[in-house]
Length: 316
Ligand SMILES: NC(=O)c1ccc[n+]([C@@H]2O[C@H](COP(=O)([O-])OP(=O)(O)OC[C@H]3O[C@@H](n4cnc5c(N)ncnc54)[C@H](OP(=O)(O)O)[C@@H]3O)[C@@H](O)[C@H]2O)c1
Image (cartoon, rainbow, N blue to C red):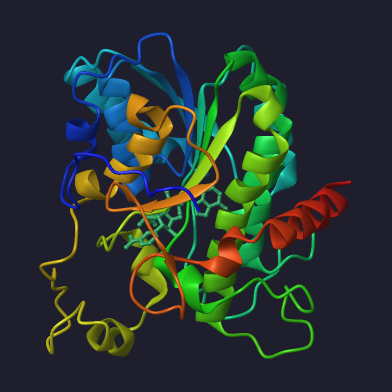
């Protein structure tokens, strides 16, 4: 393993700080789930630095707060809005067929977490896997010509530390034979996100495309919408009255977007590919799945290729 990449940015650096002095004029970027949470702050920072940012969202009206900010604050770049439901392959086809010209960075940010019950997409995939992984794989694959055209495009996969306890289960990825568990489903889909970056780094390197994955940190957002009070309290995220608590290690949304923009646009990671970052630094491989870092199962080239084939087959 090569030496871990280091940047000057600490865990609480904001996305704007990471992009300070970086001019993204002329760069075109796509951020999924860009109407809210970390995605909106990722899109905002990229557009403030001059990029033309398309946010791909389920409900375009929900992105109006972002486009209003862009106008009122006179951002250097532009924010465009396109409809996309990652669990609906028809909307992916619609967006990608209408895409013209280069794409310099795809930020696979959108996600769902801990859906209480087993839900399947129209393709029959379990919904975490369909949304967090397969939709992004389909999007990246269909946008390959645009990524190629950019010359040195980047794909950024927003994963989570939740991947560490859950290797991808090739025997039963959609809970057909084993009982459904919301955290297992989320964790496996986040392993799949890292494996997607690992796969792209392996398969699209000749096209000049790099791909990396990341853990954004702990951020209070809409992601926790399916967690009941007991779970939030057990996580230390709510007090006995049910009010949300921000722990000292939690990040703001702007801090949570920092590692995403580092990987999407910073010259500090030019040419870097197939790696996993957290807190604006490359993270080490963790041996036992505890603590921080990336689990070896998420960087495994054999599993990355196997999942690559599985997804290609599903999309045929
Ligand atoms: N917050 C954290 O502490 C944390 C920690 C680790 C990893 N992450 C990761 O960070 C990413 C962003 O999460 P967040 O915290 O910003 O949560 P969020 O505010 O809930 O954002 C998630 C976004 O994904 C979108 N989305 C969900 N399903 C979709 C679908 N089928 N098609 C298109 N878009 C869809 C949501 O859109 P709607 O508004 O339409 O639902 C929302 O904009 C996720 O991948 C998450 O796993 C977050």
